[in-house]
Length: 416
Image (tube, rainbow, N blue to C red; front, side, top):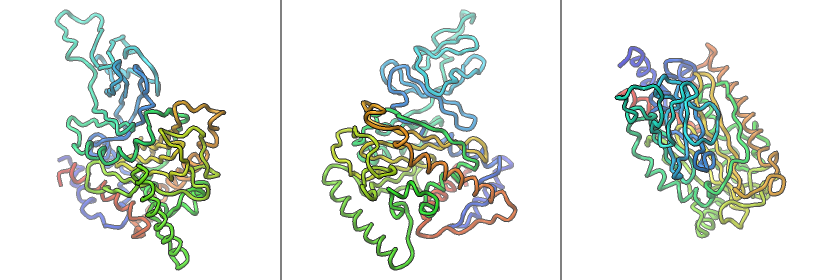
């Protein structure tokens, strides 16, 4: 145990259930390094989608704190992941977010690796040099119905298959593998990664902050508990509608009912299909589909929106016509990368089947609004006046579950 661990253990031990975390969890460099070690280096981290690397030779790079990773499609169409570090003198192999290569060639001294990570060429090395001992360091990589996850631990958590068995039937009808990435955007949020995740795990702020998003979504579907007789009656009608639609959708072969296992698993998750407002077709400004070519084998536009969350760093919205996928990556104690991808059918043509501005309008606006809120929260937490505040028991229960998962995983990492 390092000298810093007793202090962190004490902070975790005095964490008050139902309250926000103490300021150090959002600002402290040492705790940030523990987050990288105990959370991001040891758990399954969602990093992209299979259409990011659709063809043999396709590669993408992912940076998570100090960790630099390549995710690739090998010559046989299989998934591979490696540390983006040459085994010679440590240079990064790839510097472009996405590319297609025949082999991985170090730009420094041209050591050359196959897409299976094996070292193929290393000039000027002695005769007794064993190339088989100097292949790229491998990283575990898995696909969950087209969502890509990596784990840098030597032995990853063993719950991935169970999660995939539960979530795959929900996701597969949307056919991620039959999609392409129509647009993607990175935003740097000026707050700790946990603030980004906590903001996502509630809709308490939605009506005030997200006029574009609330044209299509019902805040009640994301934990929001309205107050007052009229609002409560409306919420009751919403939940009755959800129950009826779940029965209809599931009879039609679309798994829809809520499944939640957010706290006790290494890879916590939640999923549910929820109706959309007004025209009810998609998360767009007019609530109608943004893409005329529907996903998979869908012929019905009004299929609600399937929400999928995974701990510690992702959420996704699946509709009949497009998918929006969000991944969160810590950069520093007080900066976070939010990466958003919009997917459409692989055969959809921009300008004919969809307009990119319409496809992305709702979530580009929502992301900017959320980024501003994260920055405001971070600025307040830095202040000497900050003290942990109480969560609204119903409306923010999913935020508490995220914090409970996080605290639990840190305790396991510390061995406490």
